[in-house]
Structures are given as structure tokens and as C-alpha cells.
Image (cartoon, rainbow, N blue to C red; front, top):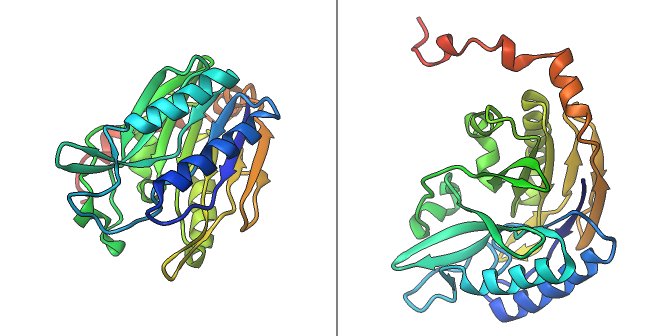
Length: 264
């Protein structure tokens, strides 16, 4: 499976510009004929403007579904549409949508872990479910930024035998080492590929770190971006996953009966 990750810069609170820019980048990414195109977190508005009743959040994700679904169908490519800021009734969510090659919406996920140090939990509603899905017969999962700090979430999805975890983020440059370490750890401990797509640029005084990457189940960085806007492509040999799990079967050797009780 070949993935092309769009390490996008966006303008804070400018959805029209950001949609136009995203469309041009998706078209450019499609030129190399990937199987999957990915985008970063909250690319429609940036992370994140303060909200009001007249917030430009995408109502029920309709604009994203229309635009990205059409692009997926036009180019015959699966699209992990990063995440966008959406409004459902009076609730604001940080929502990821995934489209298949026919442009059909195959998965949606509202970010479960909201980043309280920046007040995300004061503006957004928490998602209430995890999301796994298939692309071209490959079982995948999705996580948004802060989610990657919660290994129990990723392990829960991995127990359903996902082979790829897609992570979409606006991760700051100041904690870049955490970004690299956590994504690598999630790949190794769950024996999965991790495709982590980050943004670049600035929002206020926060600079985002880029360094999107494709990481193998062994923790090898197969491809890594820099700290500027670019498209990073890499092909994953998914056949190695079964061999790794057979040779070091951590799922067989787990002791779940010990994990649910309190330590003595």
C-alpha cells in the first residue's frame, strides 16, 4: 500500500483559502498514484480559533464530505481527510472522515481525547467511540494528535487486528521529540505500521513541527518529512506484519486477567 501524506500549512480561521489549498495539494498528491492520501488535523480552520455561535465550523461536515468525497472518486484514491472542525447542532467536534476510491464515506471519528493544556476541552465536545475500517481490504485505525498519548486506545484498536494506524495531527515543534517517540512506540508495541501526518506553519505563537512519517512495525522510519509544507510518499510492505506477529506473538503472550485489577 502506497501512502502520500500532505504535510499542509493552513491559515487560521480561513476555511475558503484552506479548502482551495487542500484541493490543490490533494490533486498534486494524486499524481504519483498512491493508494491512500492523508491530511493533517483541523486543516479547514487551523488549531484553533475561538468559537462563537457564528463559527465557520463545517456544519455536519457537509463541505468536507462533498469536496473530499468528489476528489477521492475523481482520482480513484482512498483519502484520510485529516480532521476538520465540525458543528453538529450546538456541539463542536474535531472530526476525521475517511473516503474510499469510489468517494464513499467509510468512517468518521470524533476526537476522543481533547487537549486540555490548550483548552480544546473548553470549545469541543468529546467523541464517544473509536474507529476502525478497511481500505482495499486492509484493516486500519485512526487517531487524532493527543490520542497518541493514550496507549490503551491504540491497543484496543490493535486487538481488532488493524495493520495500519493513521495519525493526523497539529503537533507543535516544541514537543517534536515526543511526536517521534510516541508514534514509534505505538508501532513497535502493537506491531503495526503507523502513518503519522502533521502540519507545519504557525498559529499565533505556536509553531507546528512537521516530520510526518511512515514507521514500520519494527519501529524503522521508512520515510520522514522536514519542517516545511511538502508531500511525503512511501510504500508499505504489509506482508511483513504477519511474520512479525508470528515470530514475536505479543498478543498470545498477553495477560489481560492481570490488567483490569488494582495493583496489590
